[in-house]
Amino acid sequence: AKAQKLAETWGVTAFRSVEEAAAVKDAIFDLATPPGRHAEVLKALPDGAVSLIQKPMGNYLGEATEILEICRAKQLKAAVNFQLRFAPMMLALKDAIAHGWLGEVVDFDALLALDTPWQLWEFLLKAPRVEIAMHSIHYLDLIRQLLGDPLGVHAKTLGHPNHKVAQTRTSAILDYGDTVRCALSINHDHKFGRRYQACEFRICGTEGAAYVKLGLNLDYPRGEPDILEIHPKGGSEWVTVPLAGEWFPDAFVGRMANVQRFASGEDAELVSSVEDAWHTMALVEAAYKSSAAPATPLAAKP
Image (tube, rainbow, N blue to C red):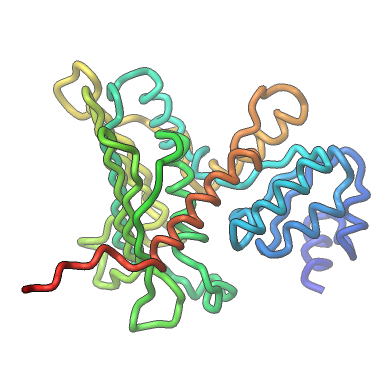
């Protein structure tokens, strides 16, 4: 009934089954489905179809692997909706790094102290994996794009005694060897007013640095303006980078545009293809495994 009402409002078709929708010719299939249902929907798509899959790419790495194998077998041109890569401040940050304005990146810090309204997503209130799988996965994916795949991860993710959401706080260190330091400190339970809340990245290189404020998460869903400032190589002060657009909705526009342009041959690369996205899922899985494993114990006092 809800689907039919929306269809009438916007003049579109409300399909009665996956098979009926999959029969549409020359379509790009946008899978806004729960992660545990992605695989069965992908199986129903015609061979060679183009698809954008909502993140995460399955609930667990095993499901991500199944999705990858389905896409390979059916030769699907499929990407995962890791849309933070397309946020204006992140596109500009990536460009600045590519131009060498920071030198070699050696430090990446993500600091979040937020009051996130989890009640907006009722299905998350009972989900076994929440913070990393549904939220910080975006940051891990972006870090992979900027720094490459880490050697491993040390992580601890946990809930909070004031509610029953599975995890809302995470600390993680990504191991990039002896040169790059990468750390995330994330707390969605900072319910003490705006003054000391934060949602920011600090990226330091050998010759410059960047500061990013992810404004959307502050007072979500209204948000605040995004900010990108760069202290460039050879510069003496911070420079504010003018941004065309905001994380929402522009990142979603860019994400789908890349899928469409890849399908038409205008873009050579399908960003966050299932082949690449699988590695983000592997990082997420490693973080949960690390969290479940015991930490290095302290020696007993003799």
